[in-house]
Amino acid sequence: VVIAGINGKPLFSSDINVPLAVDPQEVKKREPSESFFSNVGKELILQAADKSVIVAQPSEVDDEIRTIFETQAIPEDRFNKWITDNFGSMEKFRQIVAQRLAINKLLEDMAIMDIQDSELKKTKILEMLGDLFKSADVKIYDGKLREQIHAKVGHDDWKTFWPRMLNADSELRALLMGRNANLTAQSNN
Image (tube, rainbow, N blue to C red; front, side, top):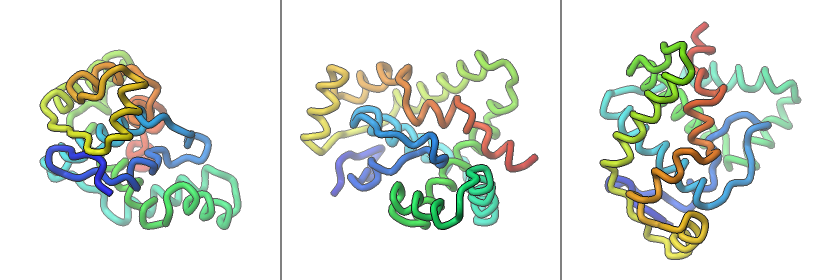
């Protein structure tokens, strides 16, 4: 079921419940407004990466999944069960890992990852998001989701919604500014 449109691209109800986090300790239950914001933001950033012809290669995804698994110190069958429980399949998990790598490559391409000053890096990331978000055409088609977002943040229009959510403790924020923002850099070292 299509619940929203993002610059003409559909956002499916099944995708809104898929976490952006790829570390078992970071996956958490999310509010519909936060989940929607994170997924729309991720899609807008991926659209920018696509325009810049930035992609993650299959070997990079394999290496990243191996690194994620090795840092978990859990048996492989338990790790695979966690993937199935949270992502539905290994293919979906691979897709999320590839998306995260592409996002980090875009940040590297924009020279944001090279910034050592954390406050300046945060400012540059927020500027990039602001540029992407304010020009986005986001429409919510699902009435229930629209009501949930309206109840949580007092508005369901993207143009008003995104600035209020930028400071929220969201998976998108963790992806861009948290410790996982260095996925590609860690993998390349």
